[in-house]
Amino acid sequence: MVYRKIQNTDVSISQLGFGCMRLPLTDIYDPTAIDEEKAVEMLRYAVEHGLNYFDTAHPYHRETSERFMGSTLSRMYRDRICLATKLPMWHVKSADDCDRLFKEQSQRLQTDRIDMYLLHALNKRSWKTVQEYDVLSFLDGLKKKGKIQYAGFSFHDELPLFKEIVDAYPWTVCLIHLNYVDCDYQAGLSGLEYAYKKGIAVQIMEPLRGGKLAQRVPREVQEIIRRTDRDQSAAQFALRWLFNRPEVCCVLSGMSSLDEVRENIEFASHDHRDTISDEEMKLYAEARAVYRKRTRINCTQCGYCMPCEQKIPISFILELYNDAYMYNAHDDSCRAYRVFIRPENRPDKCTQCGTCEERCPQNVPIIESLQEAHKSFTQD
Image (cartoon, rainbow, N blue to C red; front, side, top):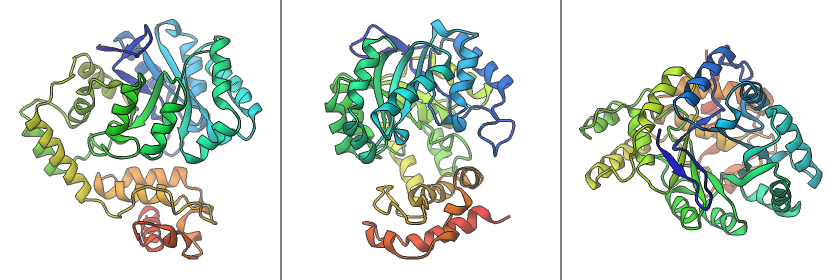
């Protein structure tokens, strides 16, 4: 395993991290139904083969991931790994909530020390919550008491806000969405470079777009991968693009099978920094263009359409609909729709008030698109 140093610390972590939000299930429609036997086998294999960074969060697997990781890691390897979890900012309605949630997470994880504690999914709204309830001072207190070793944040918004947050606190780590298709999405490559220059260790989520860059890959992209003259899978093609960047400290992969763990660990056992030529970068640009041409709806996920009076998660549904076509992933999008969108918040409850379309800077026909998505995801 190749390890990369967390800037301004004496800690090095595996360049491949284990994201614990897609553990194997005994029932694909029940996120709480973790297949513990298979998951334990995966975790054991990962640690024994050098992977030492494990990332979970309060909501993963509908609040069962932390508990599973705690019960597992209390029996194995706690002192051999770096454990990360996240404060669910959407549950913070008062300063007292931070302490309550942290205590709950520590109990679930069965540990008196959380190595990396991140503020989860910062955006414009949650950043205001951080400021209103002085959450940064709360992090200082946890560090002073030795309850956490390092503080960080994960991010889901636009680049200007990302830079503001980076500059607001002496963060150790940040976690951003990045892959070779979404290179200018949210913080993007510009955010990666900005945070790195500020001395923050940058970790990557969604390197395979939830597996979509590795499964059911379009024929055109498969041909592009073959033209690299490397013996590599689609997953390795995507991971290489990230491991190539010296600014990347750790790439989190939400692995769901032992085969995925084995393949990713074998690949991460080699140093891929600065190994992609200019000519090969052009092939990544070609592959990116293939995926982007398959976009169904010109939604940029800006969120201006929200909130919806019917509490319909508009941008999330449109993203699932786009993913179904971009990545040949209709079954995945259908499953996510049925699991995460409550019946009372689905597009068939839309009153067609038109407010969302008035707000949309891309002039997306939102009402029509939502109806199409709902029909696609609910038809037998």
